[in-house]
Image 1 (tube, helix red, strand yellow):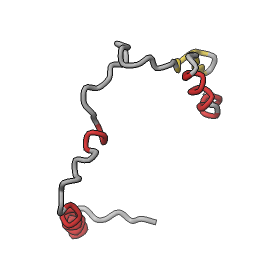
Image 2: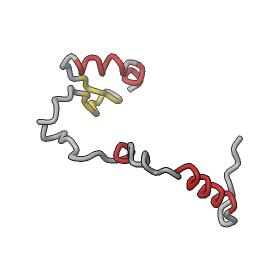
Image 3: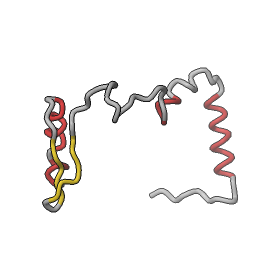
Image 4: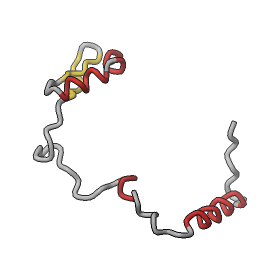
Length: 89
């Protein structure tokens, strides 16, 4: 496992060349890093639409007063008595 952490770039390079790598922990195989074969692979279907943070990329571009609205949200949060601000060091 330590080797995988240390040589992860080499493992990814091998996958790009079409080679599979077996990950071993305590002398037992636990995972395989294999080449990605594309969107036709039924085990790795491609999402029909973006999810997570990718789904909001560009979403706020047309929000003209975004900065002032966020400033109001932050000011309101700072003034809230029910939850004190975290101490940052």
